[in-house]
Image (cartoon, rainbow, N blue to C red):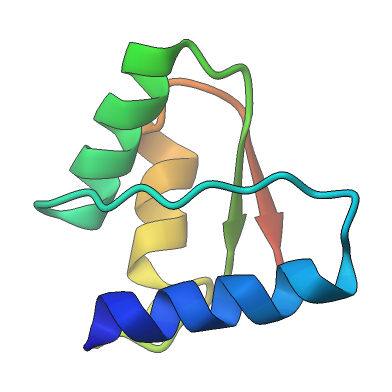
Length: 81
């Protein structure tokens, strides 16, 4: 159900921006670890992450954004939602 909602949201955003060519990747595990491993495997130079902060963390940016900013291994651009 969550994956379907994420795909629908991505499709809605992309319909407003036809110049984008997105793809969907489902990662499993802890978000920080899964994203860090993914960007490392594919050799990304930068990671862009939203700062929704809707998790249980009291961190201002959200626990995933904070964890990635500290441990991603590549520069991280944090985007306020």
